[in-house]
Length: 484
Image (tube, rainbow, N blue to C red; front, side, top):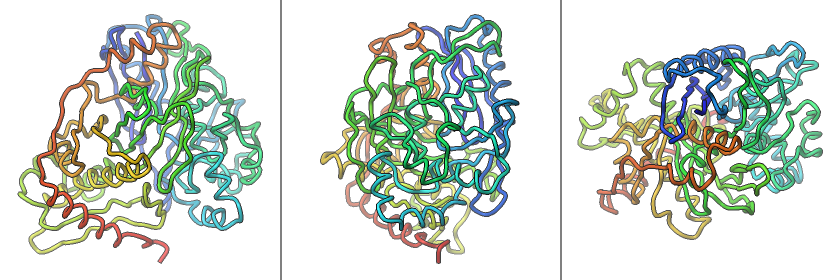
């Protein structure tokens, strides 16, 4: 069996997969979110580790197995979140700065206005200069926190260190830092110097499927053998192993990835070029990515911020209770806008409110916003590819919402295919670990992928275009608000 650790933005999930690729047991727990100032988002890395450890133990118990029964462990994680820790004590030296954190927005403005920097970053990293990525977060910690002697890493590095004692990061996570040359697969000295980061304090870049070391945390000596950022892991878990295959993961944010093959495409406007994965002794695959920052987190905000729902599942019935959206739109730019806008100064906006507006309208608007943002992301990718995506594979927690999946197919205009295993981030990490330890090969992984449901579009083209056009008007209302 393989244990997959899926360390997400709001909680940690651990799943034990059997040799047939089916779930044998799981555990889950949320952890605290910290918001020291508006636009700042932090996590306690020590709490993340302790939560993840306990959840993994729970998953093993749920599966009725012990750590010594495992063939390997795979890790997938929230990307771009930065941890600084003391390599001698193994203790964090500051709260982790989360990918949603916008405190370095002004610094990113300065970098974009510096001659040649934007072009250099795009060419070498495939990214845009945005506080979303790790580099300026590390710079902020060096300049503003007491982290002398610390090493830095994303969450995969932190978990790998706690499990094996080794300071590593796989290519997919390293490619999200603004510091990594995705062509040379190495830390870029010039970019590191630009942000004042010593490459010696960064993790060793490694393939996504490789034995990095062993751990005795769960009993026995178990190989830790697969690592990938959550979206790349989902692409792998969806068996999108060939160029042109695409998926969307509906989580805290939503991320549309298109497999681009073994050659890194030039990063187009509004999109990112990123490392998809690297298999030991094999070629590295690249992907085009559209990153949407807030989708499921908007529903969480309805629950925790406004208190108008008790459970996320309530939104399905609430949305279905209305025949139309009554012209109410919610742009959940709670941490700025990602692809294809890349506006860190956009802020959440609700338009179209009347005296007749109720919580059902807000629930429906939040779900519609998830679908509209996906449409914007896919259309940007189609513009680059020069052809329409024939179908979209879907995974993540929100695929359980049948109303949302049908609406997504309607406004996208193509079938939405939901996989049998919605937790494909965890499944992808398990597949990578299984390949590295010889449990599976790539062909076997492809054969294990299974479809659960397909949602065919029902909406007319005119209605679709009208809704999307109105959505884009709402988006313009949200743009540049914080800067103004």
